[in-house]
Amino acid sequence: MDSGQDKDAAKDGKADKGRLSQFCRPTGIFGGLSGKLLILTVVFISLAEVLIFVPSVANMRLRWLEDRLNTAAAAAIVIDGLQPAELPRALQKETLMATGTRAIVLRKDGTSRLLATAEMPASVDEKYDLSDVSQLTAIKDALDTLLFGGNRIIRVFGPVGGDDGTGIEVVLKDTRLRNAMLAYSRSVFFVSILISLFTATLIFFAINRMMIRPIRRLTDSMQAYSDDPEDPGRVLEPEKGRDELAVAGRHLATMQSQLQKTLKQQKNLAALGLAVSKINHDMRNILSAAQLMSDRLVDVDDPMVKRFAPKLLRTIDRAVGYTTEVLSYGQTSESAPRRRKIRLVELIEEVRDILAIDPESGIGFVEQLSPDLEVDADGEQLFRVIHNLCRNAHQALIAFGETEADSIRRITVSAHRIGSVVSITVDDTGPGMPQKARENLFMAFRGSARSGGTGLGLAIARELVLAHGGTIALVEKPAAGTQFRIEIPDRPVSLDDYRSKSMQEN
Picture 1: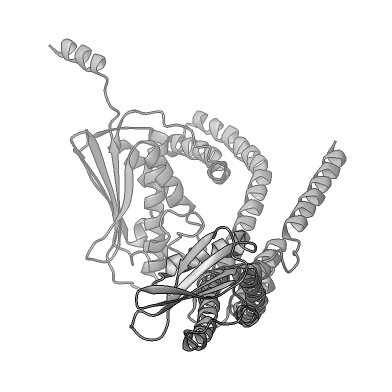
Picture 2: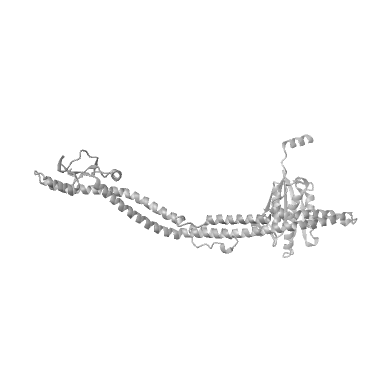
């Protein structure tokens, strides 16, 4: 079964690597950001050229028609100077061929005179007045000529010279006009393509150097880091600079370093959980044997033995439960509290007895609470919370006494009720918690206040208090020392229970 599962896991691992490699496979130049940027640049510049081309081709059309009018006007002046003689027919044809028109009409002094004509068409398809043409009208007429022109008869007229009212009118076919416009459009198109490619290439190399390369460096670093997150050499070396990509690189490097530390810590925690699960069985057997031997002490008639035997039995029972404490924390399997009314003074006295403070150590244990104060809690879990805090205070005072021999060393446990909440305070006169422990308070394996500690006691204490719906917090105090405050609220009473209790009292 195990070998089959290993084979399946190996196949799954290969499949995952195959999917990852396929996902991370580098694409061609046009599949990457740089290629897309190049294509988009060409497209956008081409669109800009189109926006420039439309008014330019309209202006080109107006200039072409104005040239025909000016040429016809020059010929008209010569012909008009020959009055009253009429221009011979052959000379009229040569003039029309030279101007590219079919008829030339001179408007002067309110009259129109036909100066030269060939075969006049039966009708005219379009009329254009060049004396006053708006830009939109010119664009519309230019597009109309490009799309639908080529075989239409048009009449064009416009002013000649100054403001004396003299004008010239010509009739012509728009084939040569459309051909000239198409030739102009082709020239503009090829020039636009060259400009677009040249500009896009410059932009491509500039953006590729300033943006694409740093982005590719970030993605390559992320891919290499994902292949082996535990290798310190896979952490990105950020570049100097103040731009967004440099800042992103520094943040990525910091995140990778922190993630490496977290992965290392998680690996150590996993190894610790495995080790605890292996020794847990043997430890329980050893404590069970000690428990059986301790049971025989009850039958001994020695008064001293009878006095300490029950406490020894309770201590061993708690030790049996504590062997699974670390493993239970890792599996988040703390049992729900079995709450009942308990006298708090008895629980604190038991904590004091378990601590077994040596009278010669100079450490005092002070209890400040009413003897009849009751708390609605799980006695065993609340004992663990107060015992953890008092044990930490005791260890801190012992270490503090090695450097401050004349200091007053004392642990004070006080409690009082405020409405439906019981407030318990554990205070000591030790050196206080270091800054690092304050920053990682209630965090397992990080919030220890002493060298070699795990910080697991405070983390478990917090979970047990929260399970009661209460709070636990470090209280800032002006004097030296450490003070924790625990608040345990009573369980809410249902309305039916409250009424029945009131009826019984009445």
